[in-house]
Image 1 (cartoon, one colour):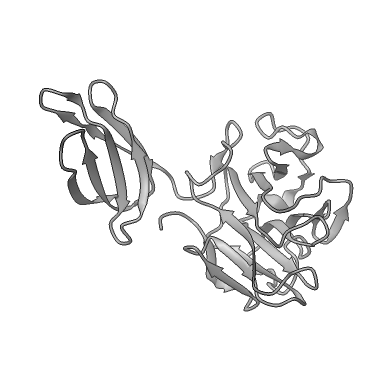
Image 2 (cartoon, rainbow, N blue to C red):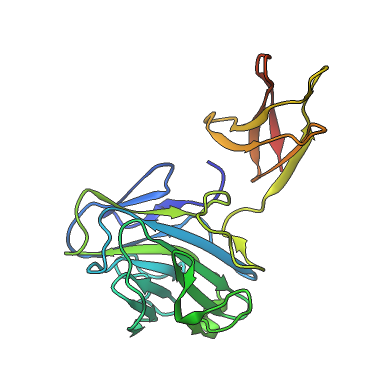
Amino acid sequence: MSGYTWNPDDRSAAIALSGNNLIATALVASGEYAVRATAPRAAGKWYFEVLLGSACSSGTSFQIGLMTASASLATGVGKPTGCAAYDLRGYTYLANSYASGRPTAATNDVIGVAWDSVAGKIWWSKNNAWMLSGDPAAGTNPVYANAVLTASLFPAVSFYGPAATAGVSALIGQLNPGGLSYAPPAGFSAYGPPLITLGSHLTISGNGAGHAVAILDATTKALVQTATPAADGSWSAAVTAGNYYVLYFGAGCQPVAHGPYTVS
């Protein structure tokens, strides 16, 4: 799958990954343990989300935030030096210094993270409502503003037992553009590789524009993106770098496949 995911080579052994490495699951019900994403980001404004799974509640210490490459994975995300996190119990952490009074969260809530790595600011949202009346687009009321947040940092999540329940899918990291529940704040980009716009025309002789365009990953054959042609048949879609097939659909016609194409 194109995009950034949780990293199978940069996780505690107490965490299992599935769903193309987007789902992190607690394997044991004791201890504290984390997983980082596959790549860091710096020098920009970035946004990613975590969708909370069935084991998450306001009584459990799951943390979502940013970690340095050297931070121990045997701890909570927000505890090491230079790291920051939101905790579902209603806390935020910066280098193990915590503040209470934040919103709590539970199963099916979407936690958004907006990070301005140039200004060293970070905001968290719950279901698109920014905590502490924050406004990332305006750069105001960040949860933290600190020079340590200008470093190269990785999105990360952590579990803490006995709150973590063995064998229960606890959260889904949506790190791919197009996989988000909410649009990034103005001026922020979805955390992941740059998007590249593809485009062409789909027309059917004597019948105008075609019906639909589907873009498939050339390796997995998984659906990546769809597009609906305009009245003149023109279409466009944004994908990350990779290899793709393009399928054309028109009423009364057999689907037509083109590719694979290398997009870079």
